[in-house]
Length: 268
Image (cartoon, rainbow, N blue to C red):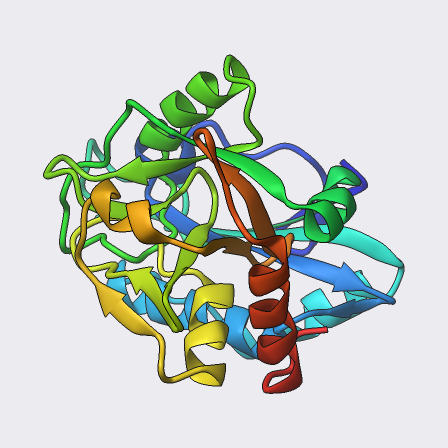
């Protein structure tokens, strides 16, 4: 970790009563820093705003934006993580008596393998762990991420770069830490994020850039005819898939999709 602050003070310690630790009562977002600037900052702030309203956590986003902009200036290429907790205290699950929210800002090294993934493509498998339904939390990047921990444990023991993840009804939802887009014929698709999964910042930017993308609720069989697949998140941005299970895919088609998105958006 390159940097960490808690409520504006440079430290890596929090109150053990903090509700992020006790109950996962909070949310986070992860962004890319390039040349001292946070990529898609407006969209990340909008995510934090929407998430904090959904979880009823009051945060001064204007002050937070100033802190984030100043923090990012010191880094050429890095990963920014912002965590918002409901605060410390309360009795049991109740928030009565809870202090003001906790704001944690962290900066990490950029994962260097992302450069290779973006240029050469990745190999994609399928996770056994499935996502439960929780409509009130669907789409939010909340702090309850045990399903993703189990998915990552699976991935660590597989000879692929990433995995697709299904929900409990076997609908395709996302990748281990990103969203997924696929091409059948000339049409691009992505999974609906209605009952499970994370509605990623990069996902929304791509859909805004290419409104013709169809959001669908399908199983893995839908990928049998896929010509190309792209996995996305706000740090890696967009990576083509060169192989799905034992099936080779077109990196060229995926790269063309990625380049089109870049031309029509603020994604570098």
